[in-house]
Length: 296
Image (tube, rainbow, N blue to C red; front, side, top):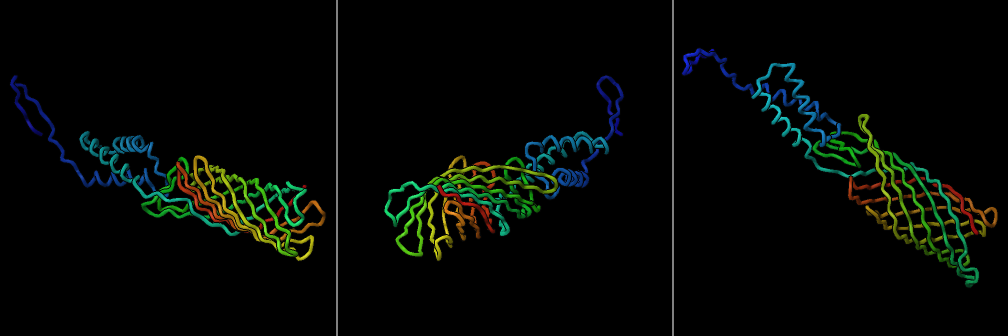
């Protein structure tokens, strides 16, 4: 205790100033960091300051802390929390080889009066598929799909649902007896729905793109009602985001009646999207497909 004589001869006593205990401050700072930024928990940048202030105030109520010491803790903790959110952003990247693709096709002859060895058709094609995969976020990385930052280290479970519809023209050459080459061109739309989850936290987003599709189909018709074929196409999608979708398909089409065909085979989709808001998407989905084709 110190004694001070003032000009009015009044005796005043003041307690001695306690030096800052930097070791204790650092321990409390580490506790704040672990509470606000545990492993695998999204870094909520918009709420960092409020959470740190509330946590520091709660700790200061439980432990006797000098005002100067508390202010220093709050200052350092706020800086520490903001710096802890600086990490490398990564994309959504995954692969699933067990996807089933339900499909439907409808075709109409656009030029009934065309030469016998050439057929010009319009085709409506629809398919969809859903895949699951796990995305690993390493320490120092984070992944933002839409609203939430998944901060590493963390394992993120992803559900990807992809669907496409296209309207195209198809030029078929029937000049050869068994060989059936076809050229395809038109317009396609792709919709990718993503759901990411980790530690009970879920984030969802949808990406929609529309653009031109071009493709080629090569088929063999050993008998009149059976077609074995392979098809490849690429679509360049536009919108708020950009996409490139490469599709490959192997199939067999059996036509039990003139206007109806049952089809099935194997399909592989390579979907890439460059997004203006959120992580880019790199999805590889493949698996069996089955569907109907109706001719008009």
